Amino acid sequence: MSCGRATRLPGFEDFAHADMLTSSDCLDPKADDEDNGCFNTLIDRNVGIFYLRGGSPQALALMRAWHARVVALAASTNRAIENEQTVFDDLWRGRGTGHRRNMTREGRAIWYRQKLEWCGMPADTKEGRSFGKPSALDGLATNGSRRVYDVCVPFVARRLRLGGLPLSLIANGHTCAAAAPHHRHLAARRTRHVHLRRATRLHLLQARAPTPVGAVARRWRPDGSLASRERGRR
Image 1: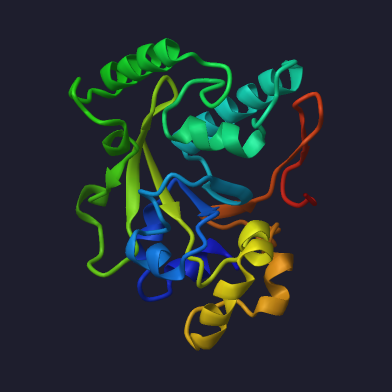
Image 2 (image 1 turned 60 degrees about the vertical axis):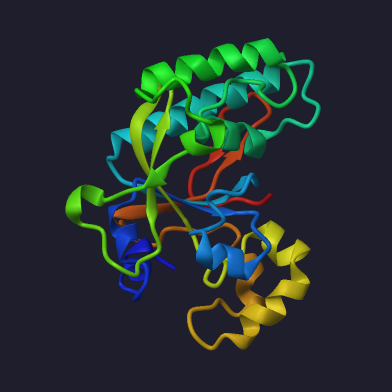
């Protein structure tokens, strides 16, 4: 599925203005619909599927920062509970390198204060409120569309427009394999869903032609270099 086709679907018009679209590990179709891809739930964005806007400085900066963190992770001797997906999720949420395992409580607090200052947020902002807010898209937001969020990633991008791909259209590897009971709900919806027998093939998409937002599947080598830009296997 190309992003061009996705943005022509009723209910997803705002996707046309996103810098990046990601899937998530959200397993609740209702929460996915009501919270724009479970945006406000602390679950990982799934890195199996990305759509990036070609030429977006914000998206490119985020990818470069992610790559740098993956390289650092590959060189680390303490990789417990850290992987390229947790690294990406911590990055876009504005958290520091090693947030989940290697940072102390004091280190997290220092980084968070730096984030608030760099992003121009009030000093008393709670972390859950700092991840992003629905974007007005400079007046171009469409009523009834799934929302895109303005996200500030400290030292990377002050305003990245990030959207969450709908569970009713995209099943990544995790949601396909781990959420089988929920798929019965999706299969019953005769509008906007991917046939489940094809869901695993959609885990990694290949862009067949240039589009405003290109599909990108990532695969990193152990040394942190990019092994595949468009297609790969997990």
